[in-house]
Length: 328
Image (tube, rainbow, N blue to C red; front, side):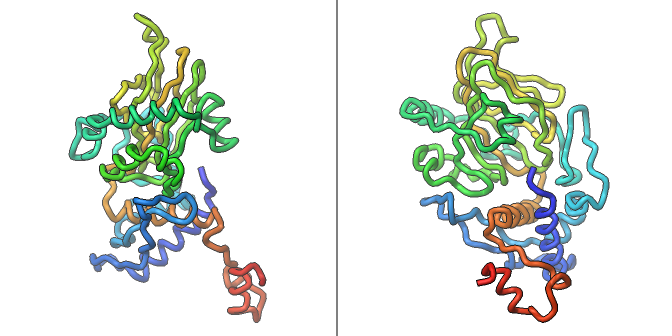
């Protein structure tokens, strides 16, 4: 989980914008939060971002579900809705929480899921071809290795709202299919994930209850005839399942979850993180804004400026210029 300080800073900005520009009796859109959209024909991993959309009366939606108060620690953290549910302080109240969802059977909530399964062979074929050409899998961080284990690695297509140009160009059919399906991708992104033989991911919660995750089975080895206990598995909350090739396994990662691959072959899935379908459009837009701002702040794209109360007397605009330029 990323730092609470920068999240709180982002939420203060949201409060300021919504209080001054989005009164609760005004239901018109306000365009103050718009930023440049990514050029999907030419994705970049360095200088382009996903849209953080338009402000749709943010004060009426995010505030009324107490998201900002919870994230800032102003109210007690959520306790979870059922056994194994472990949401974090970054929490949107009132969303359905269950370990697994049958996405392909619910076109109303997941209008893209059935078509993704129907065209899964496109992704599987492209993936198998690229897999034979080179090994592009890698881990992300020390924290990931501690939680996910040495046996887990990924090829990132999108991370923190930014498409990886090199990897998208390596998997153009997968990228175009995902783009055309208009999946409401959330902040964590999209990746091919490998689980090495005789390895697993330890039990953990990702915390945020407003993001769901789908795993599209690409290569799912079996443990042997009549040995289901030796098949690849994923446990969410108190429920344990497996994966099927060409099918979606959709889960809520704010539940404690873990995986295992007791077979002798690699297990491969495509992981897609997306906004919870019960979020309103305005709430998605606000969350997009908050996390895009936080990611930019933590990557240094948004400079830190001391509050005026902490500035030496007399610096004024000169002090602001120094904070932005580093004193040059």
